[in-house]
Image (tube, rainbow, N blue to C red):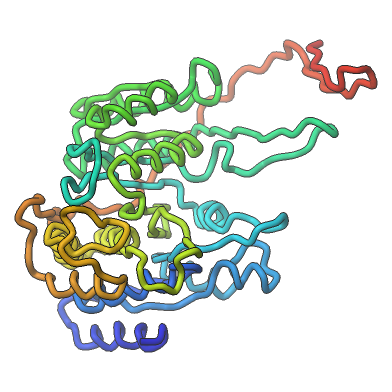
Length: 414
């Protein structure tokens, strides 16, 4: 089925539904395996009668190569600002200089400040050393080193600026506590490196303490990021919700996804005050593109998060439970092949297996329930109150200069 026919089929299937308003969403097929897993995901959404109307945009490699350095055209921005919901397939960024990260561009342009990544083990059907793992990483999405502010100071020295702001800290930390409360989570852990970066990471932890005082019902703790990462890798059951800054969150969320058994099963939400984007966390895997063997689970579970976000918890619950039943029935794509695999299937066949199980519940896994209306992925609106201006006293100046001696660069404080 072509992409155009699939979009038409989804929209036709829901034109007769009267009990709930349809929601417009923007869809990008992506690059590599993106079109395959996105088509499979849309088929499941259509069969489950998700109350959506889709708009298609092109992003990624071909748009980059057509001369758009950020990988997205103006008409795509118009769609995203109109629908405010984005289901995005993985993309390929061409090699070489001059190409901006599309993900960073989208997150910063649309204010998608919170990245939410559930990391859950599906043992024994997906092999893992941590069968009881069930945690969520909430990562700040706009600031830190990923603000992308770099410059060259000398022939041999480059600098990347780490930006941490109080408004940014307040938004992401409050979101983490609200997420924990609304999803029945018991603990929020802050991961920082404030023993070294006392001002930037120090601010992040200070705000964590301030906002945490408003949530006495939630257990709170703090780890230095290095030992926290080590504990995450060896004892993930220690954690429930982790909140951290952009770079740390990017690293530990991939670690956690891999620990759960497969990075290919993880979906993520990128939440802003006005727009939200949902995607699998894996890449476009061009080496297997077009072979119909990719696992669509990461994008499908991201779509489940999207359905919760737009208020269609009933459809999200139906799809998620059907997916769990498919996994425990041993219907697996090649990446999940194990002694528990009963039938090895293609991308399309996996989607059909999920569709066949819509309306059923898993027997060994715990069935999920999204019927609690507070379990939405919505942004937390923060009315920021500026702090009183600090007294500023000049105590010195740092000067960076290039030396012609054998030591090319030196710092001097005056």
